[in-house]
Length: 263
Image (cartoon, rainbow, N blue to C red; front, side):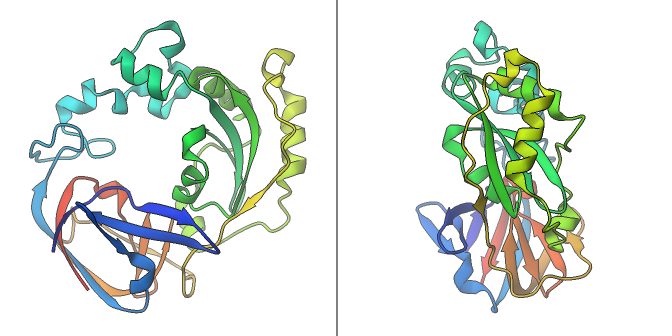
């Protein structure tokens, strides 16, 4: 079947369940673990915003024009401290009001180290699942994206803000991490005008992923280099499929790519 790839959808039960969408049809990928699948790139890439065919994908699946104009690709997506939605300024004010001028959370997530990040209230726990975190904890609740971004920047001296994707895929974790302790250490580092947004919440969410065996090394696959990718599906974590144990394919990285999917 032909599928235009988009971010894997996920739900959290005893472990994370992943689905691949094909229009109105969804495929539960967990059921395919242990089976051979093939993903063959047709050579066609669609912009995830305007749906036009594009020779190259930018950002999270945009054509060049939409990458420079779409609110979903605004600079504040990567750098939330640049958000101006609270000032009524943005590429699309209606979009910014719905998505950026809303409650945002600052969180700590754990893999091999502690990462600080932000997300909208509607994206919990999806955001943590997409990053492949072992565990996560909300540390602050803010009225908008900008304020959450300012807190994140203030904590970058103490925590990283990017996931080490190779460590995550190899399941290299630090079991000594205490997110509750890390939260209150972070609280001590902030001035009162930012510390006021800290929550009392100390609930840590642990996440388990459907992976048969974690590899010692991983080999990244891409449709930009190999049009035909196939093998035994041995696991899923974050937005990555594991094939044949140690090969990994980032589905979100290929948003808009049209493939033939067979299983």
